[in-house]
Length: 475
Image 1: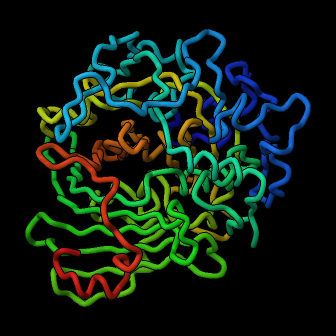
Image 2: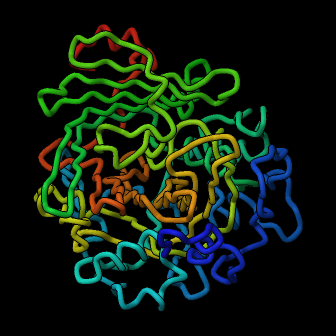
């Protein structure tokens, strides 16, 4: 793990990403050459369903429509992908919370602080840091791998089509000729991989009420109750509206009730920047909020997270050089149904220093590893980063955030659940750890609250400054 004063190469060595054997990577012929800079790559260079190349696995055959390796690994610890979870689990009763489809799974084994050297190649630097920081109470419970990620057939079809037409333009930052599905199922560089995360399938509309809590090592905690709404005109095939829309309104505490934020993302940050507006209080004046970006502290997390840590990563890609390092097998949070048990409370989950490991589930999954370094002449409080993107869904499952000297300052994990009704893989809770202050934020707590609604009737016109003026506290 990184320590203060370590150089950046030591960080890379600790992660085992560069110069390490990649025997764990299956079907390596499907991987592109390592991209040293986020330069545009012609879409035709990615083998699509209509452009067979000798010895290269094809999308929809050896590879899934999202570009994941369909087969299991050599040890069978990772099973083949067979379509994900798309049917109701046993015991499901309509109009009641869906039961855990894997409730009968038993723990495979446990990784504790004493096991780090043995399993280091499978652990993120953030996991290693937490195990070292809390050797008596923190552990990783490993379960049998369930490749539950799924999406509708129309999203798969669009992803296959995108593989033959999507491209980067304007300094490698703007996205061209992609719609509905994953833009780059076989990414040629880190920018393409990050676009896949930003535009991954999350449904076309989402509404949920949840609580964000900041838990300190001394046992104290603060809570912010939020109403969050998300719309993806991109996923709906609506090219006339901004591709991604986000709105959140504070419901509690009372003194912050009505504080609202609206964000409109863009596919072309050169031609049109991301736009944001904020409103303070229920009837406050709506003002532009261009400062909610990059390393601006997110007030909902008490500053544990920066603005671009929302959704594990969000915002423009212009300040970092993103390098696609490899695809490898690692222990990742997955199928976190234990965290969504309605009988639990926040007190059950949030321990001082870290979440209760009894309710966390980790599995062996293949992930794309993307390394990010701040470009020259730019500033950011967390200038070096590493992202781990699930090959089956393109959800970022873990991210590490370093200072310029290689010291690990923040670590975040998304613990996803497969919602078979949609179908979609979506984070139940995101944990973000401030390793310098022994506190962490938990986003998405829903105990005692309704589950997320994925077919919410949200419209693009609801995500504007004018809508904030009209809606008042309803935000």
